[in-house]
Length: 223
Image (cartoon, rainbow, N blue to C red):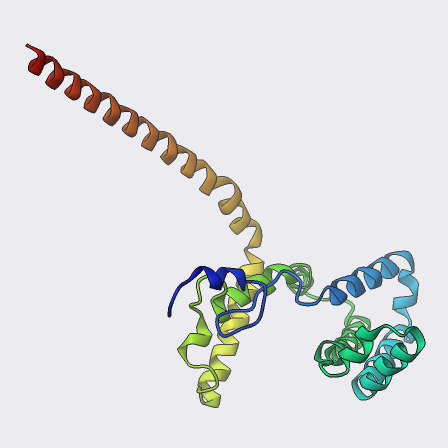
């Protein structure tokens, strides 16, 4: 692996080295914010069967008609971005899948009233999971991850076992997330501060000793 400054200019982009940005597609973030706002304002709507049915229909429609939708938006608005998006519509196509999965989750919450608190906690820490999984899988800033062990070369059994271990790791991570944050935000800075003060004292003493030695040597030469 050849390291160069050019690699750091490509951090937010997909390439042979890594692909990590905080929001893979800002449209997903904005859409999620709007849905979250609507759920907060109209919570009763999401307790009916109409909400998941609506998301399911929209998801299936986007999955099968994404190009027709984009072309229709282009003809309606004459914004060239919609026409260009038909040549690379993966993000819009996957939005349909997200809506389908979202509808399934709404139905699941209606069927199972007493959901394990850990599952709800995992749902509230998706950004942490996203960030950590990208570091572990793709290496991100360091370029060393699980993918470097052999992408698309594992047989089914090691892949299945690895996926189970991966899921178990993240379940444990979120289960202990408060303790981990306490360590990162309190204990680590505390000991880092102590080490910094210790190192500063050692360097100051080293500087004073060297200065005294040089002064003594200079005084001896003058005599």
